[in-house]
Image (cartoon, rainbow, N blue to C red; front, side):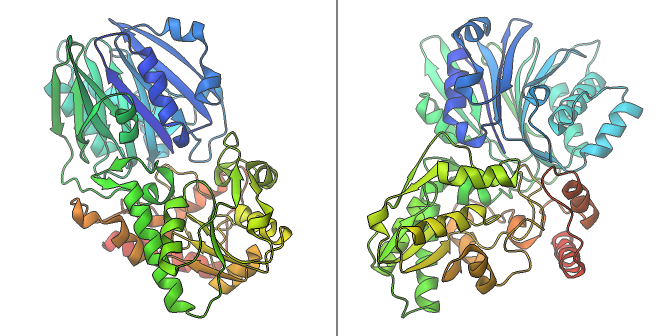
Length: 508
């Protein structure tokens, strides 16, 4: 999971890029980087850590120019935190290109071999983003005429990228001397939006992972970048766009609406905040059906993402809503921390309970999702330590039973709490008196794709149906084996179930 920004402005762009990254910090706290173009010269600074820690005044002064891209990231595909893998990436051949990427290529190993053996290009890191950059560079070289490019050549190169690269990729690039290029994979899995700002000097353009970055920087949201679409903006502000993929389909990742995106964003025409309100309504209806006699004294959200769902759930159940936990905003998200011991230590640093909201009460805790269960287990225990009589736990998302391979560093099947367990067994594992999960069909309806032209979402982490149709059991076993903090699960029954779901996805 990453945040990307690209801007073509009429004034120095460094501060806008920095502010854009700050607004997308929730999408990546592992590393950050900015690259600007001043004529045909690139300037870049990147490093590990939060945006505010990576950049100093001297760094910002060196980032001159009116065009640039920026990136913040969490590591994906099992990559370790390394300064070499911070983005943007740069290649100097054929034209000089910088690239930032949000997503994950599912065929990166095959592409890596092709680049070395056929294209004679060298990839220096384990990042699939560097693979994507080199594929693009090779295709641009192949399309250039007399070492020159026009928009048609660039769009043809992107079409070749779509034919070669599989998986999820929303990318922003700058091609020296030609402009800013942004493109989104043919399935539209990861989000990308474009906006403009009309000034007295001309129109400025901005692309970003979420609309919130545009809103706060004074850019008007034009639309989402369509699946399989490439957008080119040159230094003069000329705007070109083209659908470059064959038969693109819009299949955005549903987990963006559950957890990843900020609630004030609108992605593919869908309000994240309204989606989360509807999720709470559906979950409240389910609890009323399943446990009509359940005695609940208070509904308490696990901050921050679950607040809209918890509020609507409380209204549906006619139960008081209370803030029972205070969050330390300077601790990272726990489900993607590199080690189990570090995750356990971070939970109580991240949250502190307000004791009197729990004492002698039957409490319903609401979270956006349950992944490993590490955080859930600690939170339930915190509620009991504060004197709660009974602790129920509700997830606004369905059970997470499968890894995400499209740019979210979710755990292996072995680490996922819901894999192979019933709701009662999950409740026992986290120490709750009962657990309630959202139904997948309700979640899909709550996101409301039919109102925005989205025919289907990627729901692979819930049902194992991978939207690209190229994810095999062998591929999942390989990426699980490469993870630093997990072991590949070899349970025969779970592998059979996985094969069944993958076959279903391919047929779909």
